[in-house]
View 1: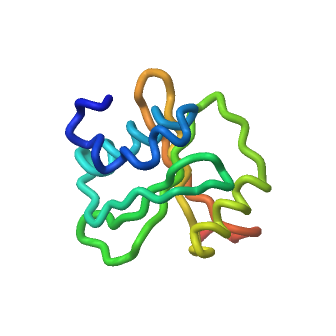
View 2: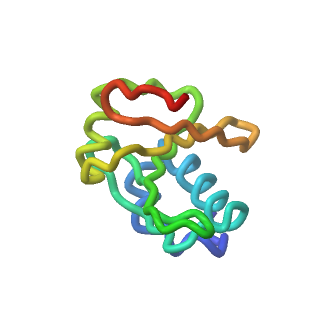
View 3: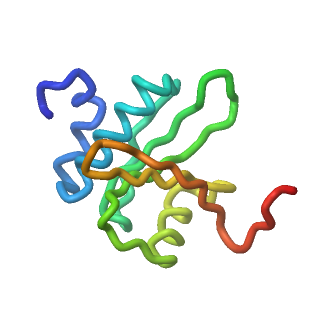
Length: 118
């Protein structure tokens, strides 16, 4: 992992949270290389023991937040509450769930109860 070109951008956070390093590395590379997000930054979320990502989708002005995790991890509402708080209470975050086969599913998570659009 240390020899990958994206490692310098992740080097500050990856060693701090080895249990979440694989999901962060995979998600960062997906957003940066495959989805071509711009202004991609790595954030430290100590309360959740992991790194998160902030950036913009192509041709969009909104800043989005992504929290990587692995499929077998247990996620609680308290954990999500702390993540929202540390990220500055954005309207929503994307939970990037990484599977062992390197596939990633992104779930849009909003605080509280949100009525789906009709």
